[in-house]
Length: 424
Ligand code: BGC
Image (cartoon, rainbow, N blue to C red; front, side):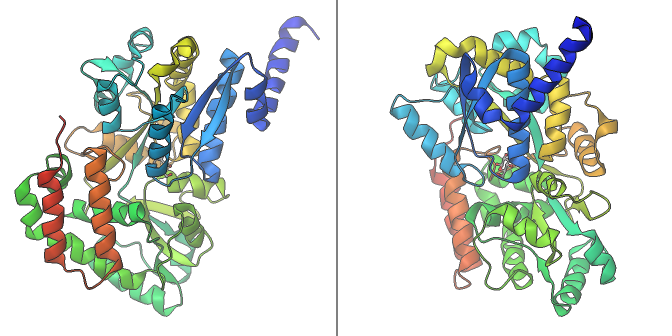
């Protein structure tokens, strides 16, 4: 075997070994980066392992994993803040949305201007993503993928067996749900975990219009909180409870997804990370399951952008941090990672032909421009974290207790929106 044929083979074998043993590989390298994140499910883990393996193979940098299980990241945020106060910051952290801007202003994040300029990120990125990673004109995060939240997943084989059509309206959903329940199937898989309830709720708000969602959560207009459309969304949330399991268990999103995968439940409203999970469990898009927009929200892309930020307190690791940022933006990683994760690349020109039908529809709608794009409240795209947390708690309270009235909830949400700071 010649040197030229042997070397690529050896490299491929090393890559495979690192893929299987990514944590161990990370430990053995001259330098490694500790990465704090909340990706825990099977598909999330696979997606993280892919980045770790490429980082090791291409730059000989280890990935020291610090996973804080916490659904949509509230717990991870708390751990990260406490570690920073204790002067024990990791080198890299999953910091999403508005938090990037807020932390950059406190000088907690490293600017990635040089990497972004070298990689021409401004030309490569979809404009909304390019904006989301900047604060006061500087780049503070490496964007990995875009998720769509207003997605209705369904078990295709189950629906076919029970002769239930995929609903295109809420009236059709009600008919389908009644039939499914009679057949002993849970119509809508749902957890009572606060962020999951509010993820469903914000998709229901979106039915009332993209601008109404923006007025409520992004612009926080006082009038939106007394608007009858908010009452409609709250009432719909309550009326959907009859189609959920009894009792509605507080469980992780991937557990709910398993109910749908096993055919015990028919539908689920969730961000499209759920697609990654279904695929990683051996199910096929367009064959075993399908995804469509939550009825009434077809024109909108309720989005969430995943990003990794580099912590400024770890300056000696700057070169390695910049290499990770550059790797994340490479087209090969973008395409491969997002296929596993269920999200779509942040790029203007991704490999569309390699995407499944859900991803292609998501990318095309997002890329169509600002009118379609609606920033998610729950996933920290729309407003300050403290406001987001307060709204999630209020919606959760309303969801759990049928004695809490719609009017009272509207009043309480209005107070939160009015009184909590706006740091723009
Ligand atoms: C993150 C996703 C993640 C999901 C569930 C969201 O906030 O953006 O990447 O898969 O939470 O853990």
